[in-house]
Image (cartoon, rainbow, N blue to C red; front, side, top):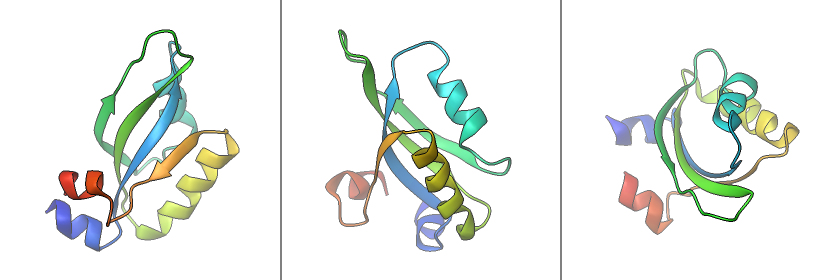
Amino acid sequence: MNRSLVYRGLKHYFVIEFSQRPGALRDYLDNVLGSNDDITLFEYMKKSNKETGPALVGVELIDKKDLKPLLKKMDNIGLKYEILKKDSPLFRFLV
């Protein structure tokens, strides 16, 4: 099922730099995700003495056209992120 969603452009994986402050994930949920988007994976790597920390995030969309608005919202709020490409070792580990 997971591979099918990825193939159809409905599931995407990101490494996102989140601020290490209370409410950072809530801000992402409220300001970035659409009403039909769903987080299917969230692995946070907290690092001490840093202001930000990376998180591995899987997002499932209802329509593949929803990816561009999602990326635009992340850009608009200044999130640093990387889309995991299909040829990435981490991507192959996940799928």
